[in-house]
Image (cartoon, rainbow, N blue to C red; front, side):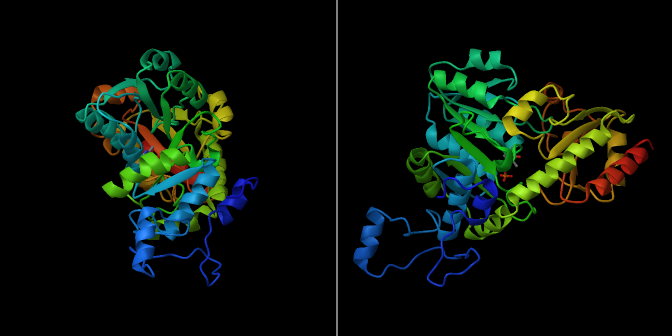
Length: 395
Ligand SMILES: *Cc1c(COP(=O)(O)O)cnc(C)c1O
């Protein structure tokens, strides 16, 4: 690892392992296994594998290892374990460390599958879970007790872009001896400072900004070497959620431009949010980079950016929101995020369809709400597209 390099340099060079050929580009080792020169060498490797020694791709692979080292360096953690998807990372980070009787405190505003893991899976195995309103520190203080093993939250929530104060929640958790596990997808690894703010374990769906082009499912768990190699790795390598070397190779390529892409997307998102704010068809525009966002100061101190997503509410409801979506010429109707292509999502009928009306009300998921993942197109073109679609939404 290369302490002292800045983000963009790390993203191009860190973690690289060259074979005897000295190839410039990261090599893709599409191999499930590795041949040992002798039976003695095989025995020795199963006792303890060295830095450049691999056994089976479910345990580790040279291309996957390059990706793990690059993202750990970027995030500022000692190590990382790459997983088959973001959900393999979330479920692996939690399940590998918890046992029956343990207590977890989690924010309520979660990605649907994260909610399923906490609400349906962990509880089935005797883990007690308490949900809190992530932005309300008093609720965290009341819920975290000396018996709490871990706290879990998304640092910026989907789709209403509410922040959790990583520094304050980490202080509350650490005072009780609990581990802080942060799903940091919306913050992106570029704008993340979660480690210096107190987080112990950071998980990403690398399907999002890291891949950046909507090609591959992937995830990663970042943490201390002890946590990754002694808690996460044994669990992941035996339960099967490891990343494919092909995905790791796509991600390594994506990372060279990750910083540039996230900053360009965030710049466009800020311009779009300003252009939309006050539009007569909208009842609200949610963007943490706008001074009207209730947590604007926290967003600036926590991420130094408003991020790459903008949400807004079409005042007259679902039919108008559908007319808006159907009129878009550049932005695509889909449900990924962090893609080079701008994506419009209607959460209440898609990603959050299964929530009860009560849960939707609690999370502010209204019939007119649109989540926009801002891509790499020209910002003026995107603003023109949004404006003509808003005009069309009037019907
Ligand atoms: C997408 C996402 C996940 C799940 O990631 P997959 O790669 O789809 O498995 C988890 N958390 C958040 C916040 C996400 O946006």
